[in-house]
Amino acid sequence: SSKQKDIIVMDLSLPIELEMVVLLLSISVVMILFSYIIPISPIKEGASNLDGWFTPVLLNPAKRQYEIFALQYTVLWIGAFAVVIILQLYEQFDAQSYMILCTSLAAPYLLQPFVYPMPAERNLPILLRYSFKANLWIAIFSFIGNYWYTHYFYSVLNARYTFPAHRFNDVPIALYFATHFYFVTYHTFSNLILRKIESKYAVGWRRTVFFWLAVLAFSYFTAYMETLTISSFPYYSFKDRAMMYRLGSAFYGLYFIVSFPAFLRIDEYISIPSTHSGSHGHAILGVLPHSSQQVACEALACGMAVLLLLDFCRLGCNIDLTIPGVAYYLYQPV
Image 1 (tube, one colour):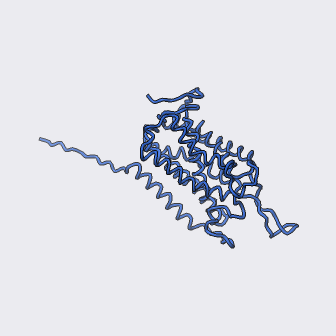
Image 2 (image 1 turned 180 degrees about the vertical axis):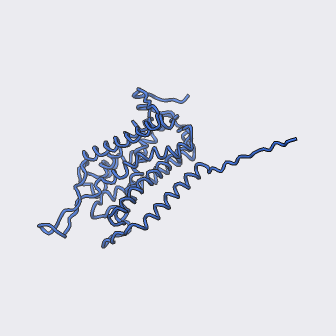
Image 3 (image 1 turned 90 degrees about the horizontal axis):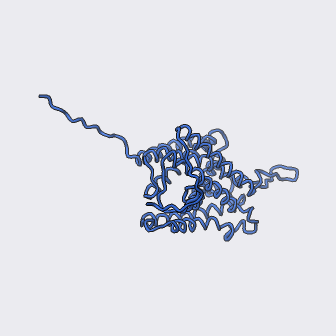
């Protein structure tokens, strides 16, 4: 008699979390190796290591002070969110609780230009303050992201928010505020990284390539880390966790491929006096500071660019985009 043998099929695939770690480490190794072939820019006299990350004090103290403030407050809002998640306080939350939490955490960024201007811009009109312009840019871009882009996650990735919420255009209003402080943090870190590349390495095609590789890498890293951390929140659901980590992170990363370099431009290359040339013994290098109108226009342009990228991806997947025609309603889970 023949004996039947059981065939054991071993699944050698890595857990998705470990797979993503390997992917991100591989990207980091490639970035590090590439950095060794880029010529280093001559060290400027009197420059410190800190100046490579932050704008020089004499060039734009207001932007430097705001970025330091943004990083300091980042520790506080992340700590507050961590307490809510670890202690599962959200289990007792209703729609009003989410609104209170997110608006309270967004308030320090939103109100800072008015009630606590940076020392270097205290005597400037509100529309000329860098902190106001940075918040205006983030507010516009994050509003577009929630109002429009969220529906691409609903349609393409089958993502859903199921916590009680006041909703505007079928998106929890609390998230419009949460996105603001998230994005301030993300774009502050991207400013530091991209500025370091521009200050450390000599101008040339290799620096340009490395700059855009950094944009791509940090965009994907940022998107993945948010996707990973929010996955511990049970009221944000998606059908396929592996697809959300792999493709969802890339889909979300499209936001930042456009926004990171665009946000860096705000008051980054402003004019400074130089004694090297000019009819009066000096010349003006760089450009004028952004106006608030220019900031708003650039944020709107970035919003449109990202919308096009998301829609091209949707068309490539042959998926319909469905947006309910309801302006406001109170969502209560059954």
